[in-house]
Structure formats: C-alpha cells, structure tokens
Image (cartoon, rainbow, N blue to C red; front, side, top):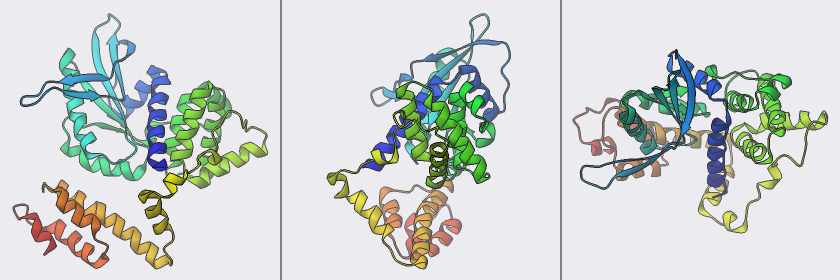
Amino acid sequence: MAELEQLASAHDAMVLLLSKMPHAALTRIMCAAAGIELHDHDDIRERSPAFEVPGLNRRARKGLIDLLLTVRTRDGAVLMHWILEVQLCWDVEKLWSWSLYSAAVGAETKKPAVVAAFVPDPALRARIRRMIPKILPPPKLVEPDHLELIDDIQQAHRQPHEAVLGAVFHALGAGPVEQRVAGIRAAFLAAQRLDPLECRSYTVLMLTLTPADIAQRALDEMRERGEYNESRYITFEEYEISPVERGSYLYEKAHRIGRRDGVQEGREHGQIQLLHRTIVDILELRGFTVTAAHRARVESCEDLEALERWYAAARTLPTDAALDQLFE
C-alpha cells in the first residue's frame, strides 16, 4: 500500500503546487493548452471546489474538483471558469466526471467552464487523449510544450512553483538527459527556499514522478556542489516499508514480477500487460460495453498468443456482435 499512499501524496502535492502558483501564470498555461486568448480580464479568484448536482432518480451527487478558478473582467463580471484536475493514475469514472464538472460549474453563471487536466505521465496522457473525443465538452490536456523547463537557478528562485511544475512534466519526457537533470536540480533548489510544508510536498512529488536516474543525478550534483540541505528534504531513505506492507499482496506481486528470470520472459510480461490495457481500450473506443466479467477475463489471461488473437479480434469484431464472441 506504500505505493498507493505515495501516489496519493503526490496528487495532493500537485494540487498544492497549482494552488500556490500565481494565477496569471497558471492561466497562461491553460490558455495555451486550450488555444484561447483572454482579453479584458483583471481578477482570477480561487473558489470552493465542492458542489452538488441534483439527480432525477437518486439523491444529489456530490463533486469535488481539485482546484477551481473564476476569471472576472475589470468590471467584476464573470468571464469563465477553469476546472483544474490532476490525474496521476487511470480512472475512467473520473474522466466521465469531467463532463459533469463543466456542466455544473458553467450552469451557475451561464459562462464557459473548461477542464484543464494536468497529467505528467506521457503514457497516461496518451491514454486519456484517446478518450477525449468521447467526453463532452472535451477537456484540455496540459502538455510539456505548454510548460517552460527552467534550468537557470536564479530564474527558478524567482519562479519556484513554475520551476517545479515544468521539471516534473519534462523529467518524464524524451528531452536531453542533461537538460532534464538540470531542470530537476533547479526545481529542488527552488523548493528549498519555500516553507517546510511546501518543500517536503514538492520533494515527494518530484521523487515520485521523476525517473530514478534523473532524480539521483540531480541530487548527486547538488551534494557535490554543497547545495543539498538535508534538513529541508524528504529523502529516499525515508520511504520505509513496514512489515505489514512487506507481507501484503501488492508488495509480493510486485516483487514476484521483479524476480522473473530472463530478458525474454520480462519482455513477454511487458507485452502481456500492454495487451491487457490495449484490448479493453480498443473495445471501449469502438463502443462496446465492457463488463467487469469481460475485463477480468482479459486481465487474468497470461497467454500471450491468446491475447494477441483477442487484440486482432477486438479491432475487427462487428460492433453489433456479442462481446463474448471475442473469446471464441
């Protein structure tokens, strides 16, 4: 469970980061993602992210947005709303909730409400991108191109929150290693000047989402240059695993996979895991209703040849056919 708790902590840290960023800078990033320009705005206010939507056949549904900003004109009139959502893992129910958020927030003032999704993981971002055509109104994905990678230390000190956000997104990308290391180092040094809560939160965020080799090189460089303040950071050593966690199913499963011998077996395992996700995605994108039983059958299959047959069938199965035919 340590991994799940760490991911939840990273989510909270990302929401904290966005809430602490200057609203004007955050709005510029989201406008770039949405391809829009805002004119004649003077005030951007953070609002309560909680709301309720009345149901027809059930009690009102509660919603909780990660961060909600309202943009106002110079005369105080509402111009639009930004719904900021942080996504660090796949949650298809959450994706459908984004449509609900836009409708509920926009209906209050009869003004546009746009979801801006912050998804640092490139693979997860690509998966969500495939779902966007099915979501109305479509959310806007913040991409690394919309964020500056700040590797200049002085600039990072002036813009610490922008430095951390850019470093996290670019660290997972395919840019030059030296540049990604420099961005993470600058972000660490910028976080070091913030209050202890923010510093530790952003350190958790960066250590959770940054590839191990990139983070380690950045920390090693900081230590070599005498820049690393041990009292300000949470370190890798502080992620201790309890005896209960060591005996858990998730921990044992992860390490059982890690103990598999042979490059070929590891490669086949990766292909199997990829096909598990891909088959279900293709079926959903083509409009099939994938039940829990169908999903369980796909995800429990460890036969690579069978999964490859199902993958080919998922691409060609007539849309009016019964989904059980896939497994025949």
